[in-house]
Length: 124
Image (tube, rainbow, N blue to C red; front, side, top):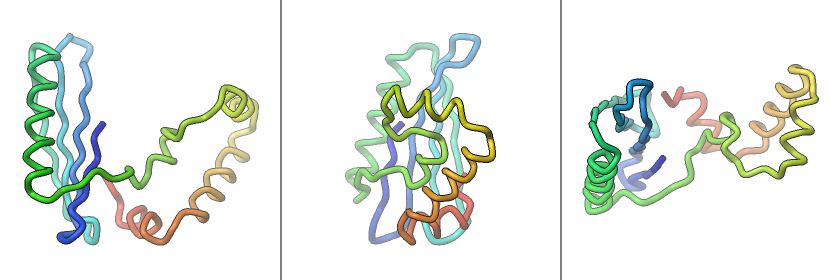
């Protein structure tokens, strides 16, 4: 996954590369405004991983030339993409669901205001 933002224009762009169950490679492009709910997406299908990665590289370079910079995905903590130790993962698996939700709420309230704003705007 590649996540980029254009700081002056307050826009974001994300690329996600996945393989489907039939063996095709999917390149998802997600883009929109950081300030409003306006957003869009594009799905490209490729027969080979090399073709998909080449296109991903091309999209990435185009966005960098247009002023986009790499940024941290603002909602990654919701998807547990934050690096964890094995002990943290095991400890979290043993917790009841309500405790996991409380932990998520604590993490959410501890994030800076930009992340909270983006969550309320419904990144999708």
